[in-house]
Image (cartoon, rainbow, N blue to C red; front, top):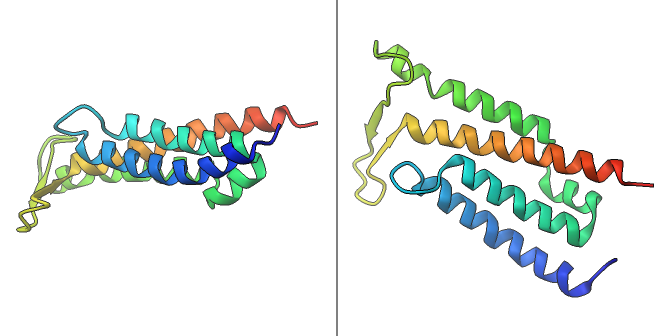
Length: 138
C-alpha cells in the first residue's frame, strides 16, 4: 500500500538517518556507538525508504550492490591492520597520526576498522533485506 506521506517523509528521514549514522560512527571509539551501530542505523534508513517506495527505488538510491559494500568493508577492515604490521608492532595495535588540526585531532587505525565494520554491517543487512523483499515479489 503506497502512502504519499510516508514516501515524502522517507526522503527526508533517509538523509537525517544517514547523517546520524555517520555521527555514531565517528564518536564510537571513545563513547557508545561505532561502526556496528552506525551501520545498523544506515541500513534502517534504507529499510524505511524501501518500505515507503519499493525495492526498485531503494536499489536505485543505494547506487551500489550490497555485495560490493561488503567487499569494501572487508578490505578496509583488513587494511586497518597493515599499519601496525608495517610499524613492527603486534597485529591490530592502534597506530595514531596527529593531524595538527585542533578540531580533528589524532586519526588512527581504530577509525579505519570501525569504517570497515560500518560498511560490512550495512552491506550484510541490506543483502538480507533485499533478498527477503525479492522473495516476496509475485
